Length: 312
Ligand code: CP
Ligand code: NVA
Image 1 (cartoon, rainbow, N blue to C red):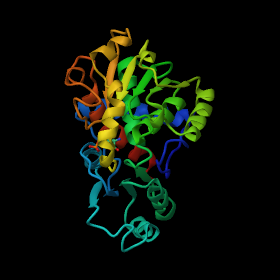
Image 2 (image 1 turned 60 degrees about the vertical axis):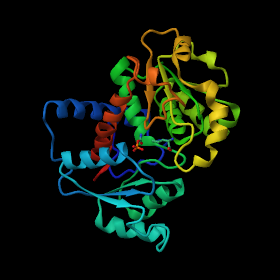
Image 3 (image 1 turned 135 degrees about the horizontal axis):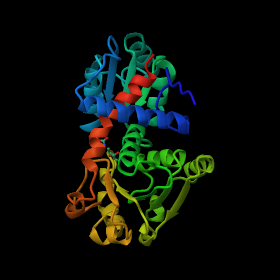
């Protein structure tokens, strides 16, 4: 099936079809092989890319920067103190200004509304590099990693454990539902994803042959191919740290939890940065099951694929 995502923004992944996501993943895998062979193109030559960051970043910032430079584009970093976004100037006005100068815009920040407004008013593709609600470029890198390890995403039992309603969990549930995975959220009830998102994802899963389960029971690890966790306190939630540690301690990824899967080929995933000793033990993080640095590298290849596919 032909896919055309030219001119599109990547805000939540909800509006991307299974075929379009599959196309982006295959393109990223191809670009990774090419980079290994020392081949990089000039497919983004002459493009200027704005990189807006309200929150800090290592992987996302570096992935966008390197991907741009590999393909001949110019990345421009705009930190929270560098521009007026939402303070001295409305998001709508900044969007229209940037859209006159740049070919594409990456936004990392707090509000999903801001990234949606940037897309609506700038007239150029906007890529969500993380908001409080979603982290779609992370989810693409994660599925690329799953595909590399297992050859497919279909019917993979993917367990996400910990804070089940954060940006990473939300985006993983969306992409898993689109790609036919058996997605399990293990989390205390107070940290379950919203009913609305669950319903949306269950509908996606109907079409892809996927499944969404949600439970408080860590024994649902049984048969997992993947166990994934993220920090217990996301950026901006630091005040909740004491209560979260208490609530989530039973959901730590440690050796005992890994054993519950009864799968010698299980992989451990984390978007990073990790707080070792909280959501994952040092032992699991450093074990042979851990693919966290493959995920980090794949951020760059998938982000490159997204820019190449969506820039006009
Ligand atoms: N995983 C991720 O988004 O990392 P950064 O916060 O370093 O960009
Ligand atoms: N959930 C984390 C992801 C960091 C990449 C956060 O928002 O801080």
